[in-house]
Length: 174
Image 1 (cartoon, one colour):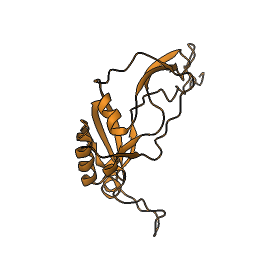
Image 2 (spheres, rainbow, N blue to C red):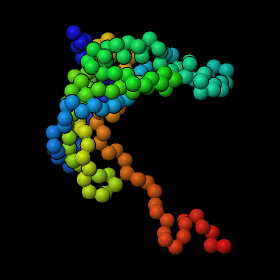
Image 3 (cartoon, rainbow, N blue to C red):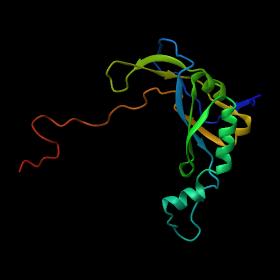
């Protein structure tokens, strides 16, 4: 029997203005999300004897995720029908795959399909959507720090300008 679920701090998603229901989601569709794990050691508040230079590998070894935590997350999420397909312990990230129904069950949420205004201003876009907070199985409440990708609403718009046909904005005119 799966663990009871407990709220995941910081996971609240507010309603998206202008979101309208779209066709129902196929709960058997397989999706992929990223699960963030806690650090194996806390980052120092301030270096004691000046800045210490660490290579990316040293940083990951010291402050990445603990392999035991990753193993427990894989086991517990497996009870919900989810599979860890990739593990990147230095960045504390697990890639997890499973059906929409299994994701909803493991993370205590309901996903739906909606259309909403495109942040770039080019009409409407359809995407998965959720509101409220996520939950995680109680054995993982101190290990999982975030779940990303359940809701794939557009969050950004392009911040670039196209150069005019007559030349690049960087041309000097020489």
